[in-house]
Length: 302
Image (cartoon, rainbow, N blue to C red; front, side, top):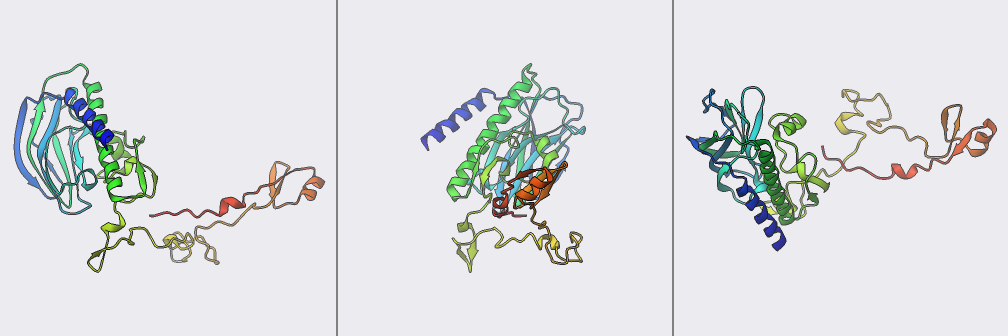
């Protein structure tokens, strides 16, 4: 625990070392309970940094807030996002959040997009900077990665606190910018920490989060009780668009092939051919020995 705290302190020191000097403010003092787009900027103004300050109230374990800025030409940056996995508080303030907007090059913001899901967010002020920095790109990258590491630490602490069965670390997905993630997942995506997934069974909730007859249920979970590829999406139902035409109702299950030996002859692998027959053909007999691959059952939640 001490090592984790020291690491967090080091990250916070790094963040302060790259702090932007915000020299202008837009007083907003407006609350939002649903996703909204506002236009608080002077379209002719060139800025080099944007931050937001305000307060948030979560209404459930799946609450979510994200604030992004757009210049009208699809140059989109994320100022702030949060959800219950990232904080233990249900009501809290945030100050000068600028995950991807601390240092920008001659940016012309047009709109502020506030994504709200089962939460309330009030934005007190928008802070701007017009001071140019020749290393803006490098500093912005450092700030974004440092904020990302703070998020990862929060996700890891949540997993440990809840006793979840998955692990989190930096991944190629977590290191993407917001715009790249939006292109990957679609606009308005909500990941709930999944970009940090590195192994195990992903879940937002522990068994103790579920209730049964008004009480915490330690044996409950949010996984499916069973899974069968034969009837998934109605694949064994003639009325389903996924029906494969197999009257035996195999659904997504393909026929079992080549679990025994075979013969490579005439540029073709002849499955389940015995060795003597293969020799009489003048082919090369090979022991497939693949039956072990049919044993594992893949557990899929979809």
